[in-house]
Length: 96
Image (cartoon, rainbow, N blue to C red; front, side, top):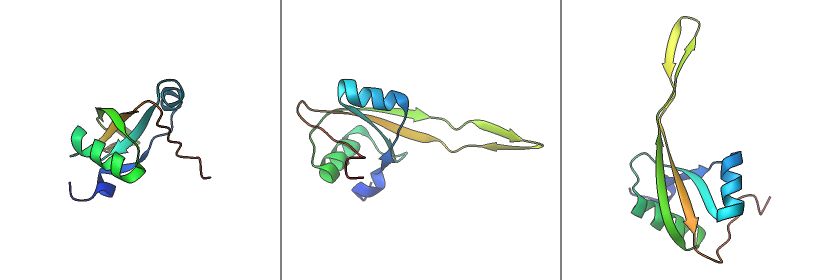
């Protein structure tokens, strides 16, 4: 990947993601399809200036949806579960 901002698309706010953030210091983010764990780790560390311990990736296939007679497919997504090192804290909504 060329740019670190093209690798990380943004945070994902879900109940499970919020629970993981509060209990285990893990963040759930959406990343580019072609990004690997090493690229995600370097991009995250350079953008947020936080130390990353571990990165786990999840590929989610798009669902097939029907509306009346037409059939469509939602786009595929790739998520990353980023574990921060001890003492590191990051809150996406902190400045709001």
